[in-house]
Image (cartoon, rainbow, N blue to C red; front, side, top):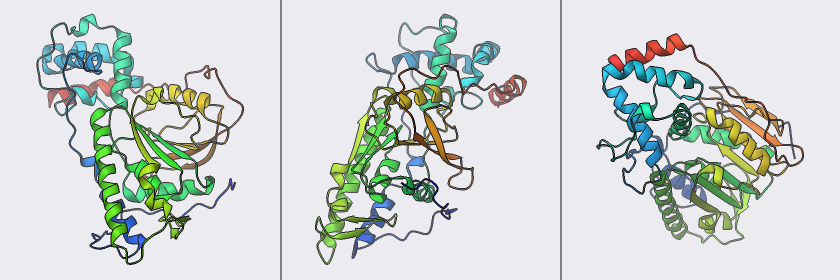
Length: 357
């Protein structure tokens, strides 16, 4: 396996894309499929359901307590007092969920919801970590094209790709189209995102069937097929597309990644989780498996850095490619590796300005 591939020339923007009116060749099918999975970053984000059986009830309770302090100026000092000890795990100036366009419903709290005074610092800390992981973002099409150009020299044909935090499924479906993975699996905690990914997959498979039916010459399982990545495959790549893609609604920490040859992490909002994620991957992945992260590096002895791409090259943020090395590791690395502490005075000034606006 080539360990020092030449750096590809990366794209800097999406190329113009004309709608595909008719599929005359497999390349037309691929283009129609890629176009169908774009635009997820602008999807409507529903609020969380406030029902007694909701799995997010503990999250909602703490979110309501924090938001109550945002809404009352007399409580702003207390809000800062409670958030100040946890800046190292907070994404942004204030948690997005407690702001007007956040994911908390605009309904009265359920009976029994506690005020912030009755909620411990440990609970606030854990809530902020979870809240950061719920923020949604995705790469643009040209960035994913760059990503798969960068990763493909390290991959062998076949294998299993897993996206932890797969959102609307764009990376998973792009991977299944671009490279000859045996299977591509997306793991997503949020029900509505999982549901939208399933809907997108149905649309993708419908377009695939329609495209295959419109080809002048039928594609067979053994027909040579050139993939968008430039790699060679056979007609089974498109004919069996549905069996190669799966979406699972689950917490990433509860999904076992043993057997994965590539784990993708869009980890820009996972900073506070990176210790736990890297320990999980070190524990479960086989030697030789690949892991890629964005923004946050993996600082764990079980992973060797293969490539690092600075912000503005492969993507708008940094992208790192790692390989699992060494024997199985059951014990977590002992040190905390991702703690950071923003300037407290600057943070307080930003919060007060935001709350005053």
